[in-house]
Structure formats: structure tokens, C-alpha cells
Length: 508
Image (cartoon, rainbow, N blue to C red; front, side, top):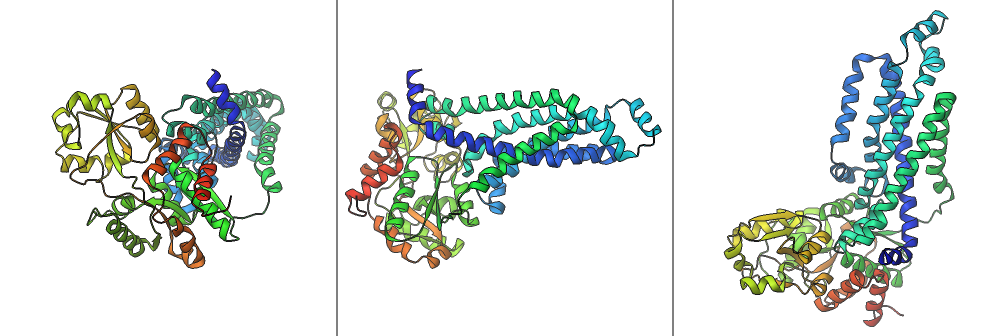
């Protein structure tokens, strides 16, 4: 409990910021879903033949995995809150639409007939009789939708939308840090409960106030959504730097930002903590970000789907840079010295027990061990698929898990072998044994700035500025910086600044 309080005190600023983002995204999505669903539900009560097909479509939307929807939207609307709100709106439609339709249909037919007998047309009957009586049911649908949206909003952090999911992802990345995960999860749950209570009050009063309850709710929601936009400043970033999830990409984009702002007048914004290579690369292609640090091996194998012609770092960089330019119109600048290659790691105890020195040694015990691999590694040719072919392996059990979860899994003994990154801080903390790769399955993975060629054409000075890091940062230095961020909880910007000052690249 004391450690949680300590983390809470250290992260109060981040908690307030992400809580507000979470609340705002949820409210905007709810307002839009309500504005779509209520009129549509009312329309369907007058056109019952198309009611079930349309309600069925909204039900199908709710069954699509949220991560898939977000990934699909990136090429069309970019990253950030816009695709998150679109996806959340789609998830919130069904409860409101179904309750609106059901609420109107369940109004006593005798009352409808009486209203018709008094000379009311369909519209007046709806406004004076049906809608007021159906409001409690409609409000119940809005309440259900709200809880669903608040819970799903945590996923939006994977595409740079912010929210409490950002803290949860940070906790997962740091080996399943329970305090950070709880710091994000508890406020998300409390937010859902508090909003549920508030909407329950609206639901109860709607029996008397009728349509006014819904109008009041929408006005309050609109003010929450529009208010920050009215008072927000007009400053716009000239460049936006993105990064995958983890301490290392966060440190690197802070280095890029500091170098660029030191030598130019450009305003640079940061969008860290994307979940996967596909997400951040799609954002770069779409133009939502301008630069992100990519690895030469990843560019070659995952993005270009090519095998390395050589395992020499310079040759891999040349092949990747030429391929990215020809295939995507991208510029891959000079790489740094360190090689954050994939590695297969196990505990010292496991290595000693089975005399494990290289990846090939796993063949003798492959039926007895459990591997914990990331989904990306399991599916890649320069990952488990290549291990199976090159080393004739077929491990008995392979569990896929988040990068942060796998290190906690090997620490607790839930898995015996994991895929790892050579410069990761947890390699130092857990004292893991890296199995040798004598057949050179893993190509070199040197970090380098990746950007669209049009960005470099617009700002040609970026090449000289960012190439100052070319050939710098050793593996030991990168491991140490990652360790400081992951295990000493230091700010990535502070760590990045200290390195640049020490190297004489910026002034203190």
C-alpha cells in the first residue's frame, strides 16, 4: 500500500492529465452516439421493416475487436483522439439505439390510440406521449453505453489518444508494475461508477421531466467537449515525433526533439507509446507523425519483408535505407552504434540446469519448456518462425503476451524462455542469460530516425542535425539509460538531456 501511495504522489500530474483526457474522450463519444442513435431509433419505430437489419448492423459493430477498429482507422483519419472517438462512438450505438426503439414500442397501445383519437398526428403523438414515457428506457441505454465507452477508452492510448490507458500501458511495459496498472485502472473504474450514478439520476428524473433530461444531458456533454477547444491556444507543432511503446523509443524521440529545437526554430511535439510497429508506421505514412525511431532490422524484415543479404550492420543499413526509399519514399537516416537485436533469453538457473548456451540447445528440452513471446515475435520470420526453420525447433508451449508481461512471467517462473531486446533495462535487473545465435537468425537492429522524404525535403537541415547521433550510443549506454527510466523511474527527457550534454551535442 505504501508503494502505491508513493507512486500516486509521484504521478499526480500525469494522473490528472490522463483522467481528464479519458473523461473528455468518453463524453464526446457518448454525445455523438446519442445524437445518432436516438433520432435513428425514433425513425425506426416508424419504419419497422428496416429496424431489425439496422439494429443488427450496430450489434455487428460492437463485436469487432476495438484494436482492429483503431488500426483500420489510422490510414484514413490518423492517430490521436479522432479515430478513438469514431471507434468508441460505434461501440456506443447499440445500447442507445435498441433502448430507444424498444422504449417507444413498449408504450401502451391504448395511449397511442387515445392520442390519435384526440387528433394528434404521428409527430405530435411521438413528442407529447411516446417520447416522454420512453425516456427512462432511453436513459438506461445511454447509461449502459457510457459504462461500455469508459471501459473501452483505455485501448485508445495505443494510438496516441491519451487517457488512463497510458498509465496502464506504462505499467505493463515496466514488467507488469502493479502500482502503475492500478493507478490507471482504479480511476477508470471509479469514473465509470461515478458517471453511472449521475446518469442513473438523469434516468430517474426523466420519468417526470421527459425529453428535457436528455436535452440537459446533451448540453452538459457538449460543453465538456467544446469548452477546452474554446480556451485552448492556437500553437501548432511544426514536427510531431512518434515512438513505439517503451523507454528506449521515448528516450530517443526526446533526444531528437532537444537536438532539433536547439538548432532550429521549429516547434516539436511528441507522441510516445504506440503499441506496435504497424501502428506507428501507419501513422507515419498517413502524416499524423513526421519522424520516429525505427530499427534497421525491423525496417528490412517487418516493413520491407526482405531477408538480410548480410549480417554486417553497414550492409543491413544500406539495404534497409535503399528499400525504404524505393518502396515507401521514406528516408532512413544514419543509425546509432548500439545493436538492439532480438535475443532469446532464459534465467541463469535454467541455463545451468540444461546446459543452455545457444538457441540450438533448446532442441533437447523443447518439450519441457514454456516460452513467453510477444505476438509480433511469434509471427515474424526473424523471430519464432525463423527459429523453427533454422534451428529445427518446435517448442512444447508458446504463450503470447505483452512485452512488459513476459519479463514478469520469466521472473515468476511462469515461462522458461522469452524473446528479449539486447539493450532492455530488465536484462540487467533480472540478470538474464542470452542464448547465442550462431546461425545469425537475427539481423542487426540499430536505431535510426525514419521519416517521409517529403519531410526531409521540407526541412533538409534535419539530416545533419539528427545524424549527429549516427555512430553514437553504445549498447552499454543504451541499457543504462533504459534502466534509469524503467527501474529508477527517471523522466525520459531528463535522461536524454543528460546524455546529449555529456556528449557535447547541446548546452547544459
